Image (cartoon, rainbow, N blue to C red; front, side, top):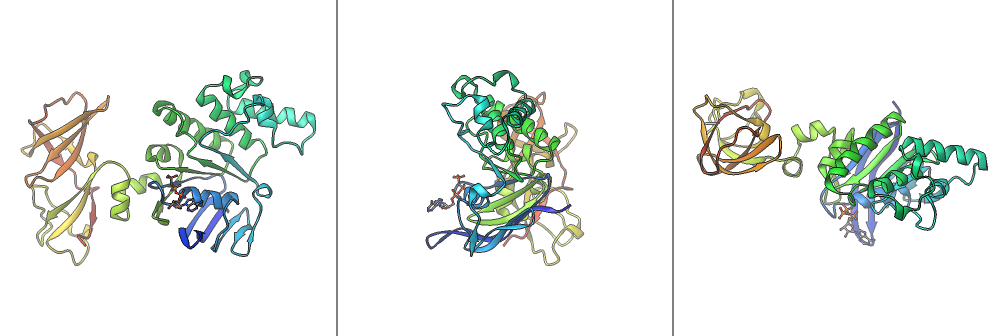
Length: 347
Ligand code: ATP
């Protein structure tokens, strides 16, 4: 598959400060990507550079085989085939839904324009609100109309800047999943910015994780969660604990955690390893002799998330069915499943 969007070693500066350095990332046609990372890491800056609102001071951005940003040339935003959906929806308050969607379609004849508007309204399932004004819509409906407006001119890429953050938590994940299936069905290439990993997991085929202006890992949501390439990624993505554990030459771990197979360990492993333990690496087992003190627990509906203390006091998470309801201060019998733990060098 051809790459639709290519960012090649892109640096974007504000004055002397590089907000994004050396970012490399690409999206194939029809692929949905996500820029994820903590506040201030450069996500919006990168999205704005793709939209043409910021220039690049090094590297290049190309879209559909054409260089649209290089240090020498920045193609104007209005000349890029880019659709944008913003956090605050940015619908025109004085125009009804039909006119909002038709706004960027002035190159079409009246008849073609109306057909396209109807098609877009059907796409987002909101044909019934065509005559309403933005203030007469719910938050979720407004966001769907913003999506319809951005898709109407048939852009080469759709850019979404924190598109769900003004919606309540339940609607956010529901809409993220809905928007994903809509984009996939219509083979739209899209790139979303978010600091919310649940949203990123619900939407993206591929995630670029940023930290302090650098792309630190580009991977599928699954790999980013299960194979984080750095302590930063391990810490930022998902729940889990990074613990220091003693280990002997045969791979036997301290704290009664069991053994690690020697071929999963770095050649020069010393006498301590750092392990990323996810809640699903520790299973409740009422036949087990390994019993850990419950330090805290949170009810998640179908599950409990327990926080357990190892013998040396380090804390690890454990996910159980919510029928396993044991009091804080009591002990939880568990089995460690070390097949998926991620091992880091202690340095
Ligand atoms: P958030 O999740 O909080 O929106 P972000 O990851 O999108 O953050 P950016 O908005 O891209 O981060 O900002 C990256 C860095 O660039 C930050 O240090 C920010 O203060 C700085 N910055 C952003 N816009 C400007 C600007 N117009 N002028 C100067 N510095 C800016």
